[in-house]
Each structure stands twice: as C-alpha cells, then as structure tokens.
Length: 189
Picture (cartoon, one colour):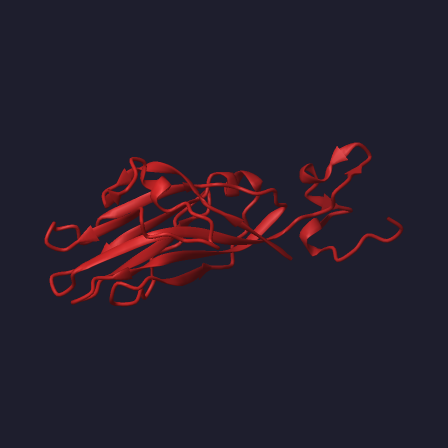
C-alpha cells in the first residue's frame, strides 16, 4: 500500500463559517502541511449562533487504483476561555462516512489533530469526487473553533505502471478472475 496527500481545492456550496484573510474559504486552509499558518483561517463563534454550522470542501486528487482509507488532518484550536471543537466527515464519492470529533486543544496555540475513515473501497472516480466537511461544536457552554490548515492522507494501491496487451492498468479490474488488489505479484513480469 502507498499513501499520498490531498488538499482542499474548492468550496462546495455550504460554507457557513467565517473566512479570515481570504475570500474563498478553501484558500484559508490549503497551506502545505509543513508550514501551516493561522494568518488566514476559517472559524465559528458561539455569540454569533454558529453552533452546528458546516464547512464543505472539494478535495484534490492523486492517481490510485483503489483507496482503502483516508485520514483527515486539521490544524486549529478551540476558544481560549471556554473551548470549542469541530467534527469532521469524509465523503467517499458515494456517501458521507459520519462525523467524528477532532478534539482540538483549548487555547490559542494550534495543534494538528486527525481522524481516519477506514474500510473504504474507492476507485479513481470516487477519489476525484471526494469531499471533507467540518461541523462546529460550540454549544452554549463553549466559545469558538478556528482551523488554519487541512489535508488528507489517502492510503491506496497503485496497481502496475505499465499496460497489459495494450490496456492501461487503470482499466484492468481483474486478472484471470482475481481482483488486482488481491494479487501480490505477477509471475514472469
């Protein structure tokens, strides 16, 4: 199995949080994981009544044969005084996998948090259409949530890098009735 990173590359229509330092919400959180920044970010605040507000993002893609899991990373924090958090959900090209609590730190020092969505069976088209969404968890006793960077690590099989009888490996699902994801090696190749 191999891994590859994907980043937010579009707003998907539901962008209810406040964007700071950018116009398009995905531009606020698409920094490289090696240099995350909080100078532009997305946030939701309790006094604004933004509990359960949602941010929905298209994600970039990489070339795969089959993706089996996706781990979403978010760099952020909950409000300094009363905290706050966010839940993350992943769309696998067919359905949402279900919200998971991120557990962001309370304060003003951001940290990376992640959640894994496993037991997936995504082909290239599904990965090309994947999305990530966040839901604010800032009920009456909480203050705010701020996220400055997001990316996801895709675990996948990459298949072979050549053609069989002129057919691209991405178009081959089975060899002699066996799924290519179940073949460890091909004899004589």
